[in-house]
Image (cartoon, rainbow, N blue to C red; front, side):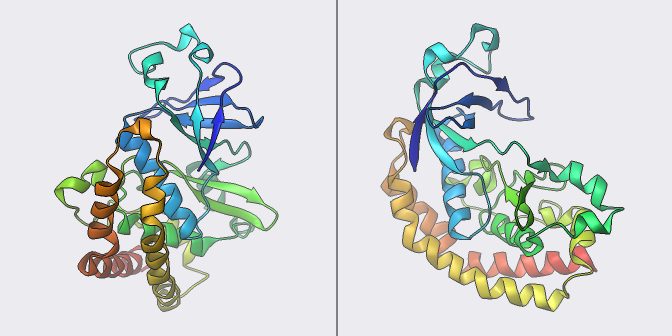
Length: 272
């Protein structure tokens, strides 16, 4: 994972239900959306983004970002944004200025087949749903999709963002439980609208099952390297963390089978 430093003051604070990410210009002359939360949440963002990349699921370019103290204006100081929180490296996602939130785009595609046809990776949306079930991501659901549609030369791509609450909201140490149908993004209204006319249920399941175990194998081969690359300032026991992840979601046959089975069941429910 790369590293960048801020070169000017914070431009914007995003008000969300959880964290309050900040937008800042860095030494690569790109804008970055940075999170500066507790170390375990920053680690979740980094791990999930790394795994998404191995799954070939679009997600913003990510990096460690060091925000200098002089770049935190006093006007932003409050109980949530405090200079002390920026003494450790932030998790940064490169800003996608032309991306649209799926909730806003859905208002258009629900009545416009032409716009819906511009989506390039509908199967990618379903892959994200399977990924979320596998990694127990409670931060993406019908009420909070955390999905962008980013324009590319081939059309709009579903792009996954915000993963601080994977592992049942940071419950990896205590054992994981499977997401329910209502917890999954497959419960969202737009699932049926986007998939119903393009794939049969059997075709979708067949495609996803072929890729699923290949993606898991990629994660198995890279998890230790990924975890060891986390900034030491986050204070994680990387050896222990890597072992816990492997035992919970990578080398746990029951978890793998249950995750796939639930994805199949929820998909049938969502498009029937």
